[in-house]
Amino acid sequence: MSGAGGAGGVTGGGVVDTAGEGGWIAVAGDAGASGGPTGEAGAGGLLECLEDCSLPEEMCVIGVCDFELGRCARWPVVACQSGDGCCPTGCAQDDDADCTAMKVVLAPASSGNRSQDGVLGATTFAGVMEEQRFHAFFSFDLSGIDGTIESAELDLHYEGYMSPDAEEHFVVQTVAPPIEELLDTGLRTDAFDALQSGAYCFDTSMTSGQAGSVATYGLNETALGYLNSNRGSPVAFGIVADGTLGDSSSVEGIRFSDGVSPPLERLTLIVEP
Image (cartoon, rainbow, N blue to C red; front, side, top):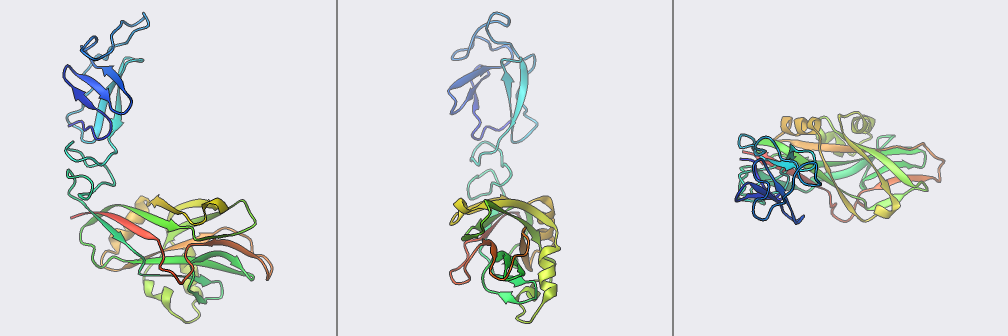
């Protein structure tokens, strides 16, 4: 099946309706079909595709004729839509009956920060303060996950922006187990090091205008491998902000939660049974 979720469907006579755009595209042998465009190449009209643009052997792909170039174009179906026989990446039974995967949304099991001298902090601040670097972390409990994690997204809440700079850049990384060491109340410089030495997941920047917002980031294949390898156990992500150590009065960084209100971060998993 070529799929059509959100990208238009094929009508009688082989004419593709590009839903939402109000346009019609004639495929091979259908120039002049009812409701479709007419014309001849070279006369300000349409070129015809020389082959059937449908792809019955490929799921989640729709083939349409590019009537300006006279050749087939392939477009992936990305919308979660029941009844088109397609389950795009990131969709689950919750929003697409064609899927067998389930969507699981996890709130943090724990969160906090570690300073350069190994002190455990309650807020999820990442940056520099009083000549100390701070790395933030969030952990999630995967003990109830049974199946293969096909895709994952991490929501980050930009609770506070504390910097004179126009933007602050940060990197999100995996944290190697045992995760319990992050919550040890003793001085653990090794826990601080663990937050900055994991595998790369993604990096981005924040500005003061984003304070109070929640941003969603898709996790890469490395992060998916980490999550699948640790199903049934806690996992964690460390957040490391760029910045140069300031003097004792300087504060420069990002805070994701204040340590008092429940964090708004979420880990969303698409799990195939």
